[in-house]
Image (cartoon, rainbow, N blue to C red):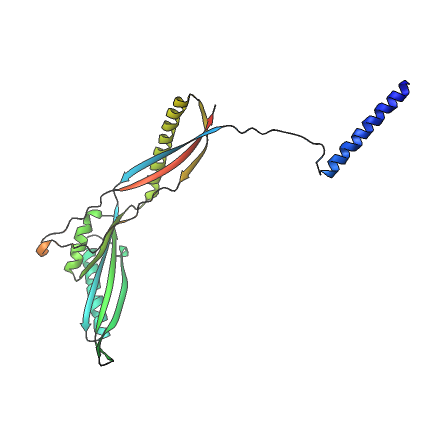
Length: 248
């Protein structure tokens, strides 16, 4: 009787084993099977902002020369070249290196007269531009005045910019981090929770200031007496960061 029970027990175990193997095969379950549970630690995220006011440290001035109704293209080109070189020489005396002056938009083109469907060349026009850049922003007004005194008949625009904004972005980022930490501490106190270490930081695209443009400015004072003051003002460099804290 006891032997029959033993045989029956072994038979039951064998059947269960076969059934288990059958289930594993049908469901494509890896063997051995391990069940685990994942628990993600809770986090608190806080956004911080930082700003830095910066006075621009460089300026760019665009002046232009226009000549009209000269007899030939060669004469027009000669006149443009003469005035352009005259402006460069005068501005260089202010301490501006020639490498910081660039001639651009140089063009010579015919001027037509239309009569009874016929077009006739009655002269030639020409344009040339000169871009002057300097870190001596206090010279901006003087540069424009000297250019006009030496033949420039257009002030096409001036701009003030920050040469190396990346160092100010770092300062703004540090301020944003401190701002986020302060807000996190206040929020944790209000909620009655404790914060652990910072687990992650994400910085949003900070604002890089663009040049402040002053287009078509009249640099000479009324009647030609004195320079018009060009003030660089200030520009704001910003950074926005998100800090993630462990929440205990």
